[in-house]
Length: 279
Image 1: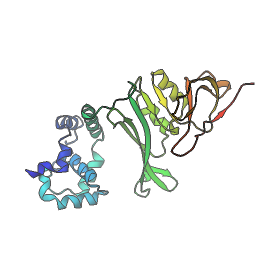
Image 2: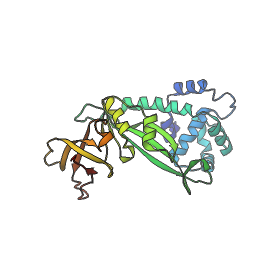
Image 3: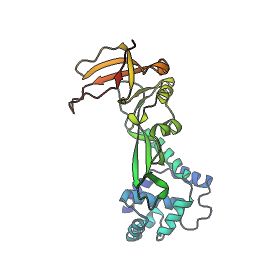
Image 4: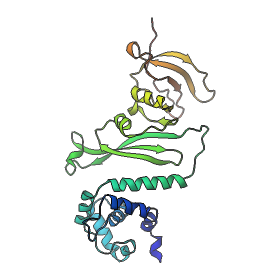
């Protein structure tokens, strides 16, 4: 019974088969399938990910070398790349999104819980570009001569696992995707980089009782309205309450707190925009 100890089988046992079959039935994914079921498709794609295959041809050749063993995971015959390509193009992606949701629920129940000094949930939001060959994926034009898609994710630090993934074209703006596709969890702490600096988005977070931490753009203009005591021996040089800009912006933003610190690792004090004083 050694086949039960294979990496592929260890991956498959975590997939909730009952919920998976329910999703397949809901979307009628196996309605016209005679030999290559949706479960077979998931099995093959998990094999491809676990073994680092980068093309349909590599997947086909890899399975051919293991054909004497793959029947243990339900693959009763050879898997042709044309069959897999047809399945990937025809079957609805919502099935696999549903599987991800079920797996996320299971992972949250078993992952170790990290204890912080604060009780609020902690999330980070970021994105990364996955390069694609523009001649093969002309719809994924990212720059003049580059192709790519963008993966946006929200990481939950309670279990150190992604709680949300969104795939878009490479040209999509980070904060626009966050505002449209990432629900805000009330009373949470969000961390993100300068790509998410949007004062309308900040106000939405504030109205949901959230705290956010980000880096300041060099173009920020502000005035100081209050000072907090700096923590000793923490590298904090300034801790101030501020208002953004002047004129029409003053008083319309959520409360903003500007902290300046000494970057000990790089021996550097990051810039914090330009301060102005009313005359």
